[in-house]
Length: 408
Image (cartoon, rainbow, N blue to C red; front, side, top):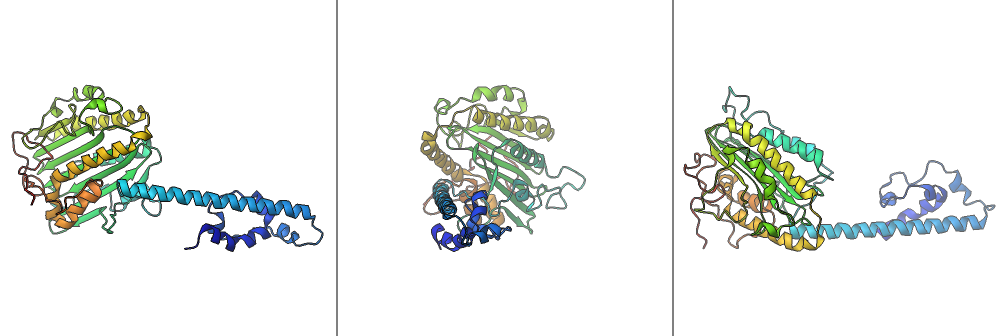
């Protein structure tokens, strides 16, 4: 591939021939490379350069101006190339995130697979119910909130390095589909959203908001599930990346407590039988198991919106600390690895879309900074998603497997 300097050799002649026009042309790093009409429309000034009666000093001034302009443009392109190379290296080492090709917008990514869906993939699902996609309003509200409130919002590709596209998958035989969108902004390194629709069997909305690593702050985690429209599970939390709240740049539980106090239905506690709830869960986590669907709209939806707004406000009130980036990314790596090893959805996705797809999805998309075990991920037992029935009564950690799978 030719260097920027070589490219300018091929474009310099026509630019010299139109020196006056170039001198007044708005300078842009890609001008000489991408302009499909390198010759100006007005050619009188360029022809005058070859007249014998032109003052030599004028030509010297114009030539000097051109030389300086080309040097300036070349330096800008070289600088931009180094920045892109650095960004690519950082993205690869931190999370394998990269912008989607073609400048895809948030709305374009959303509608690519028909989102927001209006009806379930299963035509038998709640034929008499207009609300067969229970959590779609959470998806729609979050999309609107991101678009209206985040700075420099960009879509991130859902394709991993092996070329697997995780943006959509469907099992027509089992009537189950999944859609994913991933974005980045100045406030957040990564925001991923997932909607899983399996008709009257399972409805899931999941989202995780990772702050930019210059903010030493908790991750916002959202997990909302419905089983047979009889049993419901909800978790919304500022998930700490440190063992102690005080080790974050700002404390935050005092911001969440007044919100949680409004909703008695969301004050449940998960069992510690399989899970250490002090690790990556806060004291103000919204947690609920319930069988009254009215709670979704009455309590869960407004509480969810309040937690999302509060998380963004926390970021905006926190000073950036570039010196913390390496430390924060190491904590996120530990968080992702911990979560990937225990994600209860792995078994469901393996059953629906195959083990290889499920493992790659968990490690390359859901928790993209996780470290895989050498023998590969072992899907945990998953007794309540994807046809296994509702969660058992009496609590239990929503993210933990009911039975820990031994590793070789």
